[in-house]
Length: 196
Image (tube, rainbow, N blue to C red):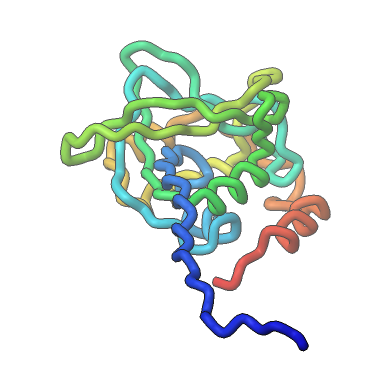
């Protein structure tokens, strides 16, 4: 005779796993442009326009996609850079880090850099931004790349004097039509795409 269990077992409610906290990302260059950020993050949540004190925009290294130097932030006491804060889920931050070549060991092309930024309304935020790991030689942006950054600054409603300052950055015409499609970028996009 087989014995059966006639009394139902009580099941304990499983606690929901803790959600990883969101991160505020200070975007300051091409990532200001909605076209650029939407490809990488689908629909990131803009929180505020903000100002980062004592940093200035610089261009170093080389991007074949734009025939241009790539933006980074440089320590510059007394300077300020305006950008936009995006609230990113852990998945979005991971996706964006993959695009930027961020590696946890610091060996990627960019790394996380913590900072306090001040919103247009005076609110202080703890955020992070991406900063180049190795600068490479200084190189001016291509005119098309700089125009793309300026279009993003306008789209995000950054202050007019900051947009004017961006327009005064020395730039050079690209030597071929840009942006150039890059097979590595297409492959990465297909791996990281999301249903937008």
